[in-house]
Length: 324
Image 1 (cartoon, rainbow, N blue to C red):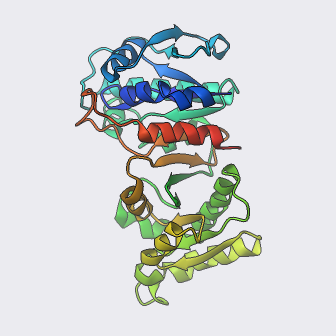
Image 2: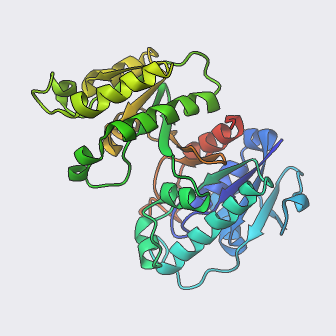
Image 3: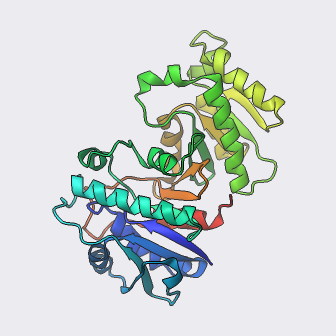
């Protein structure tokens, strides 16, 4: 079975609780060996909150993993003091980052087969003086990756994003032939990771009606179509650009395997509409496998014993399945 590193995420959010429920899931125990990176104190409390049995095995090396059912293998980052439950804090941000750094180190050294990250808080990162706007950018820097993209999967939909965390007004200038072509290439890589045979890659337009031959914008003419044509010349199974208001319906019916989307909400709104509780985030292009639940810290319901582990379970399942 694969060793899967699971980071605790922000200790003030739902990460510890959904980890407790996910690693206690009988299916997860059968398909992988989880290694939870976080604070033993926080994890012990979260297992109690979730009503799950907790038999800790604190390890300093993956070679010390105990595969016995019910055992929770933990790489302990130590106690976390002065963090604010159900809210962002500098201590929470520092702890989250420490877990991620350790997980990446293990993955790069081939001690674990994949990394699954629980939700972090951008506000907490900022409070801690950390420069990264999110997991994706941090993972790219830690692995020295320059060509990467965020892919989200849920139900019949898979979307991959040309632009990620940026203001909407910045998006048009970031839609270039190079950025779209790069994402198409990464979409093919994502299909390979999923072992999809003969995939169909569709590219969404930026503007209504995919620009309507330039009437509603020229990004399709000047950047998106040239990128699609270049990718086709390279032999990639890609088509588009398609009107954004129709292409998701085609994907929902199974007519395309993955959609290249121009900006964050273009892809995530339809995906979260149909599978809010089971969506998974995958960073494509890294030299390691990384997945994550497609939701945030949910401070409003954290530490109440009511958080659903569904997306975390799906993230672990997908991490076991993916190949690089």
